Image 1: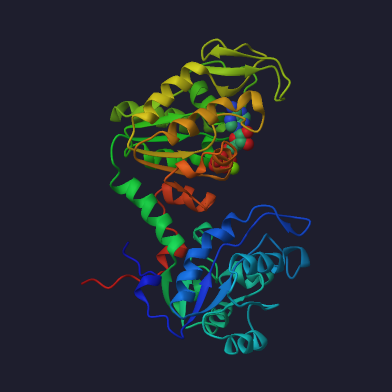
Image 2 (image 1 turned 90 degrees about the vertical axis):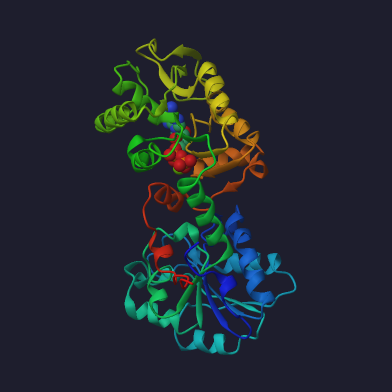
Length: 396
Ligand code: ADP
Ligand code: MG
């Protein structure tokens, strides 16, 4: 990586101002999934073991000003239990004289979690004074919040103007795994793209098409591609406004002789419901009252074969309405084939990650991205502001 990381800094006695992504799902004030907190632990341990004072910044939810429902206090409690043996403190604010005092009193090798940065509108405005107030709390800025790196906010990008800024271990891993796949993949390189809409992922499709050996399309977006080829999709969900985009991509694939694979059969139901009658139909014989809700068994077999034969696989977006059991087979089949790959397997996207976890296959993947939106933008080839703001590694 061409950016400095926590490994490039001498930490003894140094105040590490660390941006983490502790934006965890809460239900009635309880954390329902602490994956994001766990994902930051290696960086925190590294800093603590090297003698740093660790000051943590994060956002949570979308508060309009201060709100008890979006307090990081539940995260503080979970962090205490995940960092047993380490002193972890909490501050009711993220800047100002009282927070500065709490930082000054913080012993080495301990942690101070600051309150939600989004209690201030200046955070999302990337306000320079606010960023400076944050910068006063540390000597070196560490960004480990890959999930927020696609945002140019005060605590992800602005603060880096005033401090040396280095990547945390999670940030480093996300960037190196994803850029290795994009820039120098072991081949065959296969991308599996699904999910709800073409328009959400057109940038990813365009950026991946010239890089991959095969692009396998599924999910709701496959309907739009099939419709663009003239098939009648009945009542299936599709995006009329994206038909031209789909046609353009199909043309480009043909010109480049790239392999863009579409479903040849689909699971078609009478309604979007788990108890709706359903059947397998060829792509060219979907009944007018039917809805395509999953890829069919022939498509599954063909996609699985391509995935199993690959040395690098990137997957983003489920193959069907996997939330409903009768339409989850295609998505599960992709996860299973990926688990058997001898090579690099990467899963990004909130729903695809949930599907892999549901299937109990997460530990068989090389990398599960912690950043839905950020990983999508990375795969689109965009520069993430939170990454761009990091200090370049000096050229030797
Ligand atoms: P990710 O979060 O992995 O990036 P998306 O958010 O793009 O994925 O898409 C996930 C959603 O797409 C799921 O809620 C799923 O039900 C829906 N979906 C997948 N296939 C279909 C389909 N054939 N028709 C309607 N919705 C679909
Ligand atoms: Mg999603």
